[in-house]
Length: 117
Length: 118
Image (cartoon, each protein chain N blue to C red):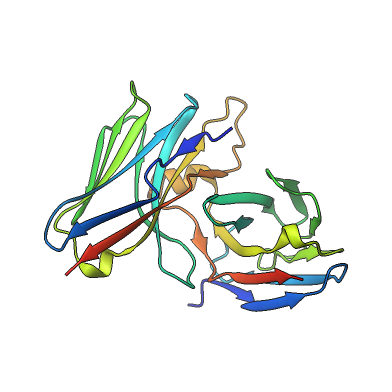
């Protein structure tokens, strides 16, 4: 059962245009969402995150939007640059009512973004 | 500041062999994790640890063992390698969840170990 889904395996955009990467989730107990970026032969690196109490978080060219009612989040990259070409993973963390949460993350399958010069 | 260091970067094992994937971090993170990445499958949690001496299973623990004798080190052991364990393995570390949320940061990952079992 895939709790975090990235339905687009790949996306190609032109340099300077907007890249929109999408992520859907099923677990209503997720309260913290993150995006990671991964280059070949490297580990994923943290990009941006958002708490479920917000609907938008912005960091430079990167903005994450959260629609809790639709259980959907998206990452916008504006303007896209060739160096943004990588695999992007969406991840989610679950709130535990009993406390002592482990900070485990559930990852999506990733979207390969290719930014064409 | 090295972050999370994994060794080796590549390894080929024969079926039935054993090996240990090493992971060490120098950020004084209490939490450490092992993930595997299979093509098209995202990252699956194998084992995790919330502190020295404390480990627990993740989603796909079968065929693996871990130990956490120090804050810095979290080795992953494969006892009887099988072709199904061919994958890329990532070690990661983090602050506690509450501290991560306050700082809005996530995991720090190592660069991975590509393991092939033949």
